[in-house]
Amino acid sequence: MNSNTILEEHIVKKRTNEEWLNELKSDGQVKDKALADLHHILVSGLRRGLLGRVNTSAPEFETQAEDFVQEAMLKILDNLDSFAGRSLFTTWAHKIAVSVALTELRRKRWQDTSLDGMMDTPDGVYTPSIVADSAPAPENATERKEMMAHVYRLIMEELTEKQRTALIKSVIQNMPTAQVAREMNMNPNAVYKLLHDARVRLKKRLLDEGLSPSDILSVFE
Amino acid sequence: MSNSENPTPLDNLENIGEDVIKRLLELIEKTREDAYSCEEAYALLDEYVELVAGNEAAAQVMPLVERHLDLCPDCREKFEVLLQILQSDEGERP
Image (cartoon, rainbow over all chains, first blue to last red):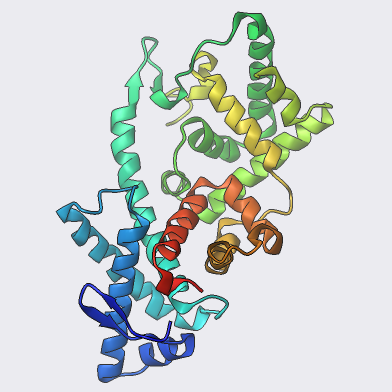
């Protein structure tokens, strides 16, 4: 697109990747204009991208989006040298803003969900409502129960305590990775690696036993 | 939750449903040893989303990113939001 883009009466100058980098690294009015344009692009992007996930027309969304973009812009400016130029600069910048926004929204979403969705069962076990399930069909009930018990046994025998904790939180309690990371005092990437290694170990053990995940899944169909 | 004082869901198998075990088995089935981490997938996400937005064969060009997105709901959500941003404004498409 060669013409300037007009977003809510804010005229955004069209720039190449190189121009974005040069202007954001410069001083004075040139930098101020680039910052204002980037800010506008990112707020507008979050409004469109999060549509359908959060109420973007609520008054508090503007404040929230503003906070997300402020934090994202600091990260963007700190990491300009890491931009590899394999995408549009604005796509890269949106990626950072989306990451900031979703991390915060998930934290809040999980806090709200965990308050609403957890309950005390009659036997006193604190169990998320997500694990509630319909009763299995009676014809396969025994086989299913045996397979489930087998998978649980593998989880207990094959995984390290740390892997097991991450798996329980992530898969059984359906907790977002970022929340698992906070609770385990790890970074999300390390949690993903932990979960990946846990799945690889379980898969290998199943294969060693002559079973594949799809074999077991077929019991539940 | 500590194992000794507060039972985890695994301490009471009756409380875990088939849906959970099926989800776990589906994740195990998709798992490959040569997988990308979140960090590696995130580093390429802007490039990948532009391929998808441009109707390019993203899964063939970047299969490891595609595979990671299949296994990681958090990264999948980032991708979906990013794609929605690009698709909702012609001016931002590559």
